[in-house]
Length: 75
Picture 1 (cartoon, helix red, strand yellow):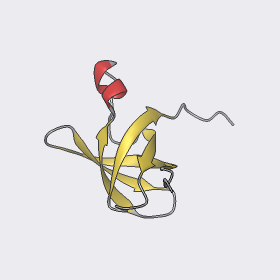
Picture 2 (picture 1 turned 90 degrees about the vertical axis):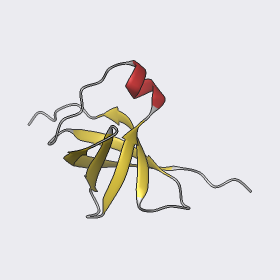
Picture 3 (picture 1 turned 135 degrees about the vertical axis):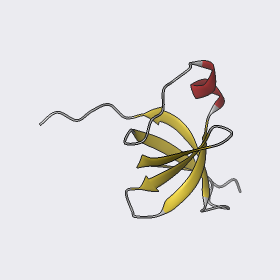
């Protein structure tokens, strides 16, 4: 049986070498992430403070993949 990946929102805290990012998820955890291939090819700008969608596997809760940016919320 195949386990599904989890997609959760978070905020970029820190830029690290080799296109890695430290992201704080909405549940309070901090994970180490890399942009997905589609994000790399699209030259998306990822800066601290941006809200992003992170895809995680159930096998490793400390690492993830950034799959998209979340637009700014209007009030």
